[in-house]
Image 1 (cartoon, rainbow, N blue to C red):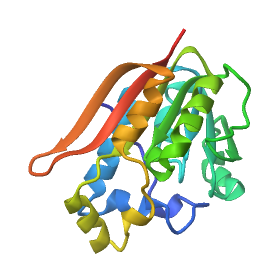
Image 2: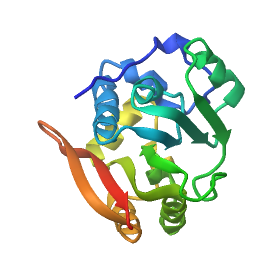
Image 3: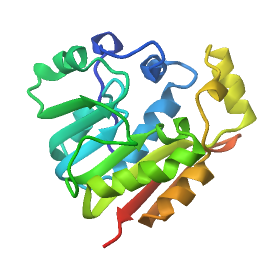
Image 4: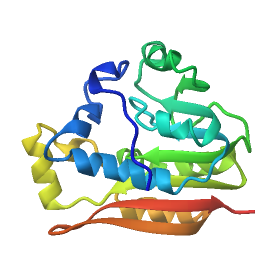
Length: 212
């Protein structure tokens, strides 16, 4: 499995205070944060054009640049101008927009792949069907949707509280909610459970294909 390629943390810019970029080099949870991204990346097939919904600080972009000719990013909070300057020196072909997965500013049948890493749990359960309907709309027929989502456990909540983050204020939908909504629009290709030695399954990576 290819390792996540990252800048040093100080080189990232344009994200808000809630962005988890600071956790990627954390002694306690850094490996978990990197591993979940690597599992998502491992499920992507190279292609022409990819959209990452909720790109945050762009930690996937250096890897995605090796797989796709064009990277598109959609995010509700990132400072597009500040963020773009981070990648200008690498001359990556990146198109960034602010917006929501519930109403995406892209044409039908446009992307080969759509990637969402730790995004869907922030939606209310009633919003999930609309989100997957939009993801299906912008994907080409046979295109792939790959998402990662935490499996919430009491111990995970406790660890995040130690880090100063109450995830119950941010997570509204479960992995089961997301899977059920996605299954209405897509065919399941693969489901990967990211397990820890002592705490069981902590994260799921799900790979769906758009129905023909």
